[in-house]
Structure formats: structure tokens, C-alpha cells
Amino acid sequence: MRTTSLFLTLAYAASMVMARPTIRAEPVAEVAETYTSYSSCNRPGVFALTFDDGPDKYSWGLAKTLHDQGIKATFFINGANSVNVLEESTTTEEGEKTYLEVIKQYYDQGHEIASHTYEHKDLKGLTVEEVEYQMNTQSDVIFKAIGKRPALMRPPEGVTDDVSAKVLKDLGYHNILWDIDTNDWRHLGLSTEQKNVKEVLDEDIANVTMGHISLEHDIHEDTVNTLVPWLTEYVKSKGLTFVTVSDCIGVEPYQPDASTGASNTTTTPATVDAALTADINLSTIDIDLTNL
Ligand SMILES: [Zn+2]
Image (tube, rainbow, N blue to C red; front, side, top):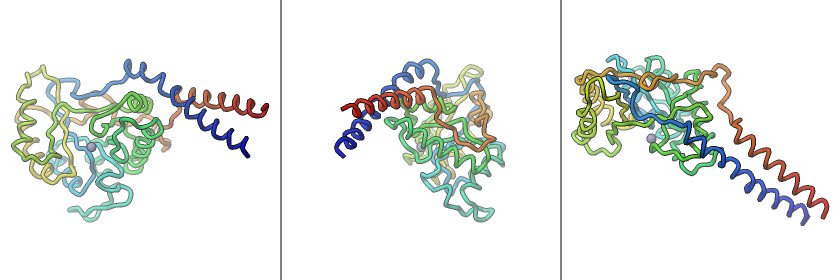
């Protein structure tokens, strides 16, 4: 019993000690070379309106209103944040709709659906497995709604670290930030939000300044009913054209291999190496104990 217990203790300790440095050693250098985040568009004259943290009860009407005006937006959504997308429904002008139907409505109207993690987790400090859980679970939610998996994501608070950035890259995501922050979630009033927008937009040099990505949250009534009506008119008055985020930065919005229905998996070289290293070291410890 004591030998078994000692073995288990050593095996557990070895797996913790051996696996973690191997997972983290390689990504750091690689991320610095290849990982990209986007905070503005790839050309002048365009404007990407984005909404985080939903869906919620205002989302159906917002999507419809924008669509009726010919505006396409991008929704960075959670599965379990403001509402539980898989379990809850909402009352709309067109009757009771599940939140999966709300997401499908975004898609059918030409809006884009992107990931904001499953539970709105701050990715900084999470393990590889925890980041994968947040992204793959949310990918499953979106797949259930529209039959496609997102390739665009926005980290909660806009924050990543080297570990999460590597996982996001390996899972095929583009990291989308913003260059106009309305700070709508602070509820400081329309005039403050107008100032936040104008201090960026009014500095534009025509045909030179790259198009913008603005950050709003459609879970707030004042955002949907007060800020968005003003903002969309102001953007139009500047002669800018509304685009989705994928159009704004010039990438595909959804994963190319979505037809299988399988989640993005974790077969990165770094992960495989770590697993092999851990196995080899456990075997060595096993033999040593047998000889004692
Ligand atoms: Zn958020």
C-alpha cells in the first residue's frame, strides 16, 4: 500500500512538473512571431460595429433594426453569461424565441457571429485546457445555432497572455480588439459616449485613416435604444460604410472545416510533446519503484 501510494504521489508530481514546462516552453517564442490581433480595418472608409456579452433580451430587435437599415454588425457572444443560450428564451416582436434562434436570426440577416468565450472568462492565467474548454464549448453553441464554427473571437476585457494567445492561434481564431471604445457599460450617458466616439472619428483623414472597429454591449437598454441610433447616423454622416469584422480585416469569419460537426481539438505539437514527455517520465519512475 505504501509503495502504491508513493508511486501515485510521485506519478502525480511528475505529471505536474514534467507536463507544464513543456507546454509553455515552445509557445512563447512562437506567439511573438505569428500571433496577430486586430484593432482597426485593413482600409479606409469602413466601420465595423461590434457587440459583446450577448445575446440578451434586446438582441433580436437590435439585429432586425440594423438589418432593416442595411447595416451588418458583428456579435461577439457568450453561451453562459447574461443568459444561458442553450436553456433560455426571450419574447420578441415575432413571438417567443430561443436564444439559439436569436443567434440564427443574426446569421440569416447577414450579421456575423463570433466568440467571446463560453462563460466570459478572463483568459489571462488560465491553463491550456481551460482556454480550450472556453473556446470549444462556445464553438459548439454557435455550431448548434448556425451549423458553422467561428474563426473570430474577442477575449473578455481584451486580455490574453502567452498561453491563451497560443491556444487561440492553434484553434484557428483571429483576435479582434477595437479602436473606438464607447465605454457604454459604464452608463455615463450619451454625451460621454458621443465624446468617446468623436475623439477618434473626428481625427480621421479621408482616404488615409484605416476603418474603425467600435465596441458596444447589446445587453444594455441605453446602448440599444439611445447610443446605437445616434452612432449609426454619425458614422453615416462621416461617409463610412458599415462592414462585418471579417470584411473589415479581410479574413474568413468561420472555420473552414465546420462540416464535420466536431469541436476544434487540441492536437497541437506542443500538447503532444508534453503528453509524450509525461508518459516517458512516468514509465521511468514505475521501473525504479519496482526495483526497490
Ligand atoms: Zn465582454
